[in-house]
Image (cartoon, rainbow, N blue to C red; front, side, top):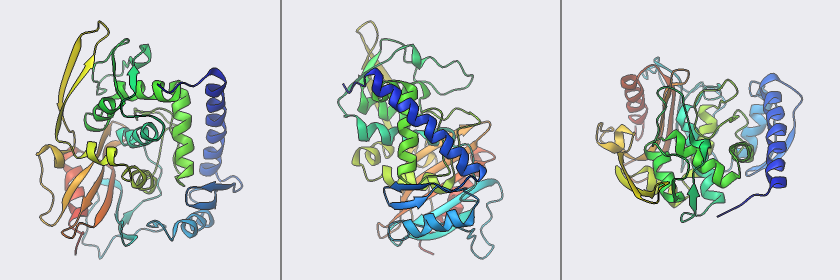
Length: 331
Protein backbone atom coordinates (compact mmCIF):
# COMPACT_ATOMS: atom_id res chain seq x y z
CA UNK A 1 0.00 0.00 0.00
CA UNK A 2 1.30 3.46 -0.89
CA UNK A 3 1.58 5.57 2.24
CA UNK A 4 2.06 9.31 2.54
CA UNK A 5 3.43 10.75 5.78
CA UNK A 6 2.06 13.84 7.46
CA UNK A 7 4.62 16.17 5.93
CA UNK A 8 3.77 14.86 2.46
CA UNK A 9 0.06 15.30 3.09
CA UNK A 10 0.75 18.89 4.22
CA UNK A 11 2.75 19.44 1.06
CA UNK A 12 -0.23 18.36 -1.03
CA UNK A 13 -2.53 20.71 0.88
CA UNK A 14 -0.12 23.57 0.21
CA UNK A 15 -0.05 22.64 -3.48
CA UNK A 16 -3.86 22.57 -3.46
CA UNK A 17 -3.94 26.09 -2.05
CA UNK A 18 -1.50 27.36 -4.64
CA UNK A 19 -3.42 25.73 -7.45
CA UNK A 20 -6.65 27.26 -6.16
CA UNK A 21 -5.05 30.69 -6.37
CA UNK A 22 -3.77 29.95 -9.85
CA UNK A 23 -7.19 28.78 -11.01
CA UNK A 24 -8.85 31.87 -9.55
CA UNK A 25 -6.35 33.97 -11.50
CA UNK A 26 -7.21 31.98 -14.63
CA UNK A 27 -10.93 32.75 -14.24
CA UNK A 28 -10.67 36.30 -13.00
CA UNK A 29 -8.06 37.51 -15.45
CA UNK A 30 -4.93 37.95 -13.34
CA UNK A 31 -1.53 38.33 -14.95
CA UNK A 32 -0.41 35.33 -16.95
CA UNK A 33 1.65 32.72 -15.12
CA UNK A 34 4.22 30.62 -17.02
CA UNK A 35 3.95 26.87 -16.46
CA UNK A 36 5.82 23.85 -17.77
CA UNK A 37 3.34 21.04 -18.47
CA UNK A 38 3.20 17.69 -20.22
CA UNK A 39 2.96 19.29 -23.66
CA UNK A 40 5.46 22.10 -23.11
CA UNK A 41 5.44 25.62 -21.68
CA UNK A 42 2.35 27.81 -21.68
CA UNK A 43 0.92 30.79 -19.82
CA UNK A 44 -1.91 30.23 -17.36
CA UNK A 45 -3.89 33.38 -18.05
CA UNK A 46 -7.62 33.98 -18.10
CA UNK A 47 -9.56 31.28 -19.96
CA UNK A 48 -11.56 34.01 -21.70
CA UNK A 49 -8.37 35.85 -22.67
CA UNK A 50 -7.76 35.17 -26.36
CA UNK A 51 -4.00 35.58 -25.91
CA UNK A 52 -4.01 32.86 -23.26
CA UNK A 53 -6.11 30.55 -25.43
CA UNK A 54 -3.87 31.13 -28.43
CA UNK A 55 -0.79 30.48 -26.28
CA UNK A 56 -2.18 27.13 -25.17
CA UNK A 57 -3.13 26.32 -28.75
CA UNK A 58 0.39 27.04 -29.96
CA UNK A 59 1.82 24.78 -27.28
CA UNK A 60 -0.52 21.88 -28.03
CA UNK A 61 -0.66 22.14 -31.83
CA UNK A 62 1.74 19.30 -32.60
CA UNK A 63 0.10 16.78 -30.26
CA UNK A 64 -3.56 17.60 -29.68
CA UNK A 65 -6.80 18.85 -31.18
CA UNK A 66 -7.22 22.60 -30.68
CA UNK A 67 -10.61 24.22 -30.05
CA UNK A 68 -10.40 28.01 -29.78
CA UNK A 69 -13.68 28.92 -31.53
CA UNK A 70 -17.07 27.34 -32.09
CA UNK A 71 -17.24 25.04 -35.10
CA UNK A 72 -20.83 23.96 -35.63
CA UNK A 73 -20.84 22.71 -39.21
CA UNK A 74 -23.30 23.99 -41.79
CA UNK A 75 -26.10 24.67 -39.32
CA UNK A 76 -27.67 21.24 -39.76
CA UNK A 77 -26.41 20.04 -36.38
CA UNK A 78 -28.96 20.91 -33.72
CA UNK A 79 -27.57 20.68 -30.19
CA UNK A 80 -29.71 23.37 -28.60
CA UNK A 81 -30.60 21.19 -25.61
CA UNK A 82 -27.04 21.08 -24.25
CA UNK A 83 -24.73 23.85 -23.09
CA UNK A 84 -21.44 22.51 -24.47
CA UNK A 85 -20.35 19.81 -26.91
CA UNK A 86 -17.20 18.73 -28.75
CA UNK A 87 -16.13 16.00 -31.15
CA UNK A 88 -12.44 15.43 -31.91
CA UNK A 89 -10.73 13.24 -34.51
CA UNK A 90 -7.77 11.99 -32.48
CA UNK A 91 -5.48 10.64 -35.22
CA UNK A 92 -5.85 13.66 -37.48
CA UNK A 93 -5.94 16.14 -34.57
CA UNK A 94 -9.03 17.76 -36.06
CA UNK A 95 -12.00 19.48 -34.45
CA UNK A 96 -15.12 18.02 -36.06
CA UNK A 97 -17.56 19.95 -33.87
CA UNK A 98 -17.19 22.50 -31.07
CA UNK A 99 -19.81 24.40 -29.11
CA UNK A 100 -18.78 26.41 -26.04
CA UNK A 101 -15.74 24.17 -25.63
CA UNK A 102 -14.05 26.60 -23.21
CA UNK A 103 -17.09 27.45 -21.06
CA UNK A 104 -16.62 26.49 -17.41
CA UNK A 105 -19.35 24.09 -16.26
CA UNK A 106 -19.98 21.52 -13.57
CA UNK A 107 -18.73 18.07 -14.67
CA UNK A 108 -20.75 15.88 -12.28
CA UNK A 109 -19.35 12.31 -12.35
CA UNK A 110 -17.18 13.00 -15.39
CA UNK A 111 -14.87 14.10 -12.58
CA UNK A 112 -14.20 10.41 -12.00
CA UNK A 113 -12.09 10.06 -15.14
CA UNK A 114 -9.50 12.24 -13.40
CA UNK A 115 -9.93 10.26 -10.19
CA UNK A 116 -9.20 7.10 -12.16
CA UNK A 117 -6.24 8.65 -13.97
CA UNK A 118 -4.53 9.78 -10.76
CA UNK A 119 -5.22 6.41 -9.11
CA UNK A 120 -3.81 4.45 -12.05
CA UNK A 121 -0.69 6.62 -12.20
CA UNK A 122 0.03 6.52 -8.48
CA UNK A 123 -1.40 3.16 -7.36
CA UNK A 124 -1.21 -0.52 -8.28
CA UNK A 125 -4.12 -2.63 -9.51
CA UNK A 126 -3.63 -5.25 -6.75
CA UNK A 127 -3.24 -2.63 -4.02
CA UNK A 128 -5.73 -3.22 -1.20
CA UNK A 129 -7.81 -0.20 -0.21
CA UNK A 130 -9.54 -0.04 3.17
CA UNK A 131 -12.50 2.24 3.84
CA UNK A 132 -12.79 4.66 6.74
CA UNK A 133 -15.69 6.87 7.77
CA UNK A 134 -14.64 9.22 4.95
CA UNK A 135 -16.80 7.12 2.60
CA UNK A 136 -20.01 8.17 4.36
CA UNK A 137 -22.03 10.32 1.94
CA UNK A 138 -25.39 11.66 3.07
CA UNK A 139 -26.38 13.63 -0.05
CA UNK A 140 -29.81 12.56 -1.27
CA UNK A 141 -29.73 10.74 -4.59
CA UNK A 142 -25.97 10.19 -4.65
CA UNK A 143 -24.97 6.95 -6.39
CA UNK A 144 -23.42 4.65 -3.79
CA UNK A 145 -21.94 1.16 -3.70
CA UNK A 146 -22.83 0.97 -0.01
CA UNK A 147 -19.34 0.42 1.36
CA UNK A 148 -18.70 1.20 5.02
CA UNK A 149 -15.68 1.74 7.24
CA UNK A 150 -13.64 -1.47 7.46
CA UNK A 151 -14.58 -2.80 4.01
CA UNK A 152 -11.61 -3.51 1.73
CA UNK A 153 -11.04 -4.22 -1.95
CA UNK A 154 -8.33 -3.96 -4.57
CA UNK A 155 -7.80 -0.81 -6.61
CA UNK A 156 -8.88 -2.70 -9.74
CA UNK A 157 -12.21 -3.59 -8.11
CA UNK A 158 -12.64 -0.03 -6.91
CA UNK A 159 -11.95 1.40 -10.38
CA UNK A 160 -14.67 -0.80 -11.87
CA UNK A 161 -17.16 0.46 -9.29
CA UNK A 162 -15.98 4.02 -9.93
CA UNK A 163 -16.06 4.08 -13.72
CA UNK A 164 -18.87 1.65 -14.49
CA UNK A 165 -21.26 2.17 -11.59
CA UNK A 166 -20.16 5.73 -10.75
CA UNK A 167 -20.07 5.01 -7.02
CA UNK A 168 -19.35 8.21 -5.11
CA UNK A 169 -18.37 6.44 -1.90
CA UNK A 170 -15.79 4.42 -3.83
CA UNK A 171 -14.31 7.66 -5.17
CA UNK A 172 -13.62 8.68 -1.57
CA UNK A 173 -12.18 5.24 -0.80
CA UNK A 174 -9.73 5.59 -3.68
CA UNK A 175 -8.86 9.18 -2.80
CA UNK A 176 -8.03 8.51 0.84
CA UNK A 177 -5.94 5.43 0.14
CA UNK A 178 -4.00 6.77 -2.85
CA UNK A 179 -3.61 10.37 -1.68
CA UNK A 180 -3.16 9.80 2.04
CA UNK A 181 -6.28 11.91 2.57
CA UNK A 182 -9.14 13.11 0.40
CA UNK A 183 -7.68 16.63 0.37
CA UNK A 184 -4.27 15.27 -0.58
CA UNK A 185 -5.76 13.34 -3.48
CA UNK A 186 -7.74 16.34 -4.72
CA UNK A 187 -4.49 18.31 -4.75
CA UNK A 188 -3.01 15.56 -6.95
CA UNK A 189 -6.03 15.84 -9.27
CA UNK A 190 -5.52 19.58 -9.66
CA UNK A 191 -1.80 19.16 -10.19
CA UNK A 192 -2.46 16.59 -12.94
CA UNK A 193 -5.03 18.90 -14.57
CA UNK A 194 -2.50 21.74 -14.78
CA UNK A 195 0.16 19.36 -16.05
CA UNK A 196 -2.17 18.38 -18.91
CA UNK A 197 -2.91 22.03 -19.71
CA UNK A 198 -6.47 21.83 -18.37
CA UNK A 199 -6.32 25.42 -17.13
CA UNK A 200 -10.11 25.87 -17.05
CA UNK A 201 -10.47 23.13 -14.45
CA UNK A 202 -10.57 23.10 -10.65
CA UNK A 203 -11.55 20.08 -8.53
CA UNK A 204 -12.72 20.13 -4.91
CA UNK A 205 -13.60 16.43 -4.58
CA UNK A 206 -12.96 13.09 -6.34
CA UNK A 207 -16.61 12.27 -7.17
CA UNK A 208 -18.18 15.31 -8.79
CA UNK A 209 -21.04 16.06 -6.41
CA UNK A 210 -21.76 19.74 -6.87
CA UNK A 211 -19.56 22.43 -5.38
CA UNK A 212 -19.36 26.04 -6.67
CA UNK A 213 -15.57 25.77 -6.92
CA UNK A 214 -15.62 22.43 -8.77
CA UNK A 215 -15.70 23.00 -12.52
CA UNK A 216 -14.13 22.20 -15.87
CA UNK A 217 -14.68 22.65 -19.61
CA UNK A 218 -15.52 20.28 -22.43
CA UNK A 219 -12.08 20.92 -23.90
CA UNK A 220 -10.31 20.20 -20.64
CA UNK A 221 -12.28 16.96 -20.27
CA UNK A 222 -10.99 15.99 -23.70
CA UNK A 223 -7.42 16.67 -22.52
CA UNK A 224 -7.95 14.53 -19.42
CA UNK A 225 -9.75 11.70 -21.21
CA UNK A 226 -7.16 11.69 -23.98
CA UNK A 227 -4.57 10.94 -21.31
CA UNK A 228 -6.79 8.33 -19.62
CA UNK A 229 -7.18 6.21 -22.75
CA UNK A 230 -3.43 5.74 -22.96
CA UNK A 231 -3.80 3.29 -20.05
CA UNK A 232 -5.04 -0.19 -20.95
CA UNK A 233 -6.63 -0.66 -17.52
CA UNK A 234 -8.82 2.38 -18.10
CA UNK A 235 -10.05 1.50 -21.58
CA UNK A 236 -10.67 -2.10 -20.56
CA UNK A 237 -12.85 -1.08 -17.62
CA UNK A 238 -14.97 1.49 -19.48
CA UNK A 239 -15.77 -1.10 -22.15
CA UNK A 240 -17.23 -3.66 -19.70
CA UNK A 241 -20.99 -4.16 -19.77
CA UNK A 242 -21.43 -5.81 -16.36
CA UNK A 243 -19.29 -6.95 -13.47
CA UNK A 244 -19.47 -8.88 -10.21
CA UNK A 245 -17.18 -7.35 -7.61
CA UNK A 246 -16.37 -9.57 -4.66
CA UNK A 247 -14.75 -7.67 -1.83
CA UNK A 248 -14.16 -8.15 1.89
CA UNK A 249 -16.65 -6.64 4.31
CA UNK A 250 -15.70 -5.13 7.65
CA UNK A 251 -16.64 -8.43 9.34
CA UNK A 252 -14.25 -10.39 7.13
CA UNK A 253 -17.01 -11.94 5.04
CA UNK A 254 -17.25 -11.70 1.26
CA UNK A 255 -19.59 -9.10 -0.22
CA UNK A 256 -20.72 -9.37 -3.85
CA UNK A 257 -21.88 -6.32 -5.79
CA UNK A 258 -23.34 -7.00 -9.25
CA UNK A 259 -24.00 -3.98 -11.46
CA UNK A 260 -24.06 -2.94 -15.09
CA UNK A 261 -22.40 -0.02 -16.80
CA UNK A 262 -24.32 3.27 -16.55
CA UNK A 263 -23.36 4.06 -20.17
CA UNK A 264 -26.39 3.27 -22.35
CA UNK A 265 -24.20 2.51 -25.38
CA UNK A 266 -22.29 -0.10 -23.39
CA UNK A 267 -25.08 -1.66 -21.31
CA UNK A 268 -27.14 -2.42 -24.42
CA UNK A 269 -29.88 0.17 -23.92
CA UNK A 270 -28.95 2.22 -26.98
CA UNK A 271 -27.19 1.71 -30.29
CA UNK A 272 -24.82 4.29 -31.81
CA UNK A 273 -24.95 5.18 -35.53
CA UNK A 274 -24.18 2.17 -37.74
CA UNK A 275 -20.72 3.41 -38.79
CA UNK A 276 -19.54 3.98 -35.21
CA UNK A 277 -18.37 1.65 -32.45
CA UNK A 278 -18.51 3.06 -28.93
CA UNK A 279 -15.58 1.71 -26.90
CA UNK A 280 -16.66 3.24 -23.60
CA UNK A 281 -16.88 6.42 -21.59
CA UNK A 282 -18.33 8.00 -18.49
CA UNK A 283 -21.74 9.35 -17.57
CA UNK A 284 -22.50 12.12 -15.09
CA UNK A 285 -25.66 13.68 -13.71
CA UNK A 286 -26.45 16.20 -10.99
CA UNK A 287 -29.11 18.89 -10.78
CA UNK A 288 -26.50 21.62 -11.25
CA UNK A 289 -24.50 19.88 -14.00
CA UNK A 290 -27.42 18.45 -15.92
CA UNK A 291 -26.79 15.28 -17.93
CA UNK A 292 -23.21 14.76 -19.15
CA UNK A 293 -21.35 12.14 -21.18
CA UNK A 294 -17.86 11.58 -22.54
CA UNK A 295 -17.06 8.82 -25.04
CA UNK A 296 -14.26 7.08 -26.87
CA UNK A 297 -15.55 5.82 -30.22
CA UNK A 298 -14.08 4.43 -33.43
CA UNK A 299 -15.08 4.68 -37.06
CA UNK A 300 -15.23 1.79 -39.53
CA UNK A 301 -11.46 2.01 -40.01
CA UNK A 302 -10.75 1.86 -36.28
CA UNK A 303 -9.78 5.52 -36.01
CA UNK A 304 -10.53 6.98 -32.53
CA UNK A 305 -12.75 9.94 -31.69
CA UNK A 306 -13.48 11.65 -28.38
CA UNK A 307 -16.86 13.32 -27.84
CA UNK A 308 -18.22 15.30 -24.88
CA UNK A 309 -21.69 16.58 -24.03
CA UNK A 310 -22.15 18.84 -20.99
CA UNK A 311 -25.36 20.09 -19.37
CA UNK A 312 -27.93 18.40 -21.54
CA UNK A 313 -31.44 18.95 -20.18
CA UNK A 314 -32.41 15.28 -19.83
CA UNK A 315 -31.33 11.68 -20.44
CA UNK A 316 -33.16 11.42 -23.75
CA UNK A 317 -31.74 14.68 -25.07
CA UNK A 318 -28.26 13.70 -23.84
CA UNK A 319 -28.15 10.58 -25.99
CA UNK A 320 -29.95 12.29 -28.87
CA UNK A 321 -27.28 14.99 -28.81
CA UNK A 322 -24.52 12.39 -28.62
CA UNK A 323 -25.94 10.43 -31.53
CA UNK A 324 -26.06 13.64 -33.53
CA UNK A 325 -22.37 14.18 -32.79
CA UNK A 326 -21.44 10.58 -33.61
CA UNK A 327 -23.27 10.83 -36.94
CA UNK A 328 -20.62 13.36 -37.98
CA UNK A 329 -17.93 10.67 -37.85
CA UNK A 330 -16.99 9.56 -41.32
CA UNK A 331 -19.15 12.13 -43.10
